[in-house]
Image (tube, rainbow, N blue to C red; front, side):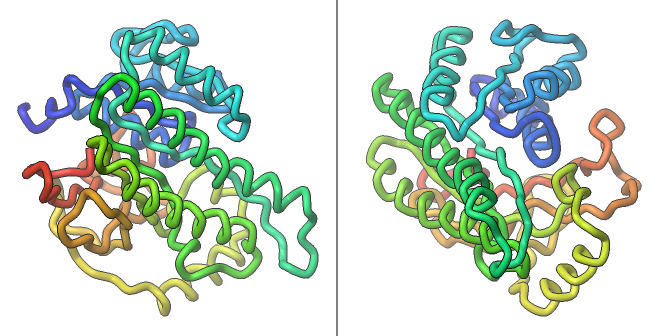
Length: 293
């Protein structure tokens, strides 16, 4: 029980919380005891996540139990600032944990990609993370709180992928953004990490043609640099790289576990498609405890 409640005093803001990795992250944070502010561009999806977290539907901005749902387009500076204002007004404090999961794809080959498809992906995946990181850090610094910012990148940002030049560029940018933010914010007691998941079955990846997914698997199987690391709960996973500058003494290779399209034997019945005990928690040398949070 102590392990499950180690984030009992934390307020966690999760963007892209309406589905996929964002919903899974919200579920894990809630199980660890955190109060979750679930944000998504689809307000209904964010409310559904909160309903799953505490068993009751929540109105936007009104804590339903301990959690609350918010709607915001993180690619817009005004909306992002307003989001942080709403979260602080609802909970009387800034979030001490911020996980940016919001992301989109607009896949096309380089020779045929439109400027609009390029701009949309960069705006959400890179600019959106910049805006959330900035306003969250400003709120933490001005209030004197310490915190942890986790930005979800992708292994595609490290190795590239055919037909995803905009997505790969945005995710590579997230890595550099997070490394720089970590160097700047460490003095304020704010840890920054970027996680690079591999291919995970989510509503976003379900839209991809099966033949494209098959080709991606074959390419990644030959290009990944895999290493097994210890986790705080559950089995060991073969996983990918995390980048940090002020959290880990010796950054290891890890990420979220990969999920097959089928239901795993130990699937969480409340959150279909997400395995229990799948999170990876590296040792935080600076603070002498397990975890990035």
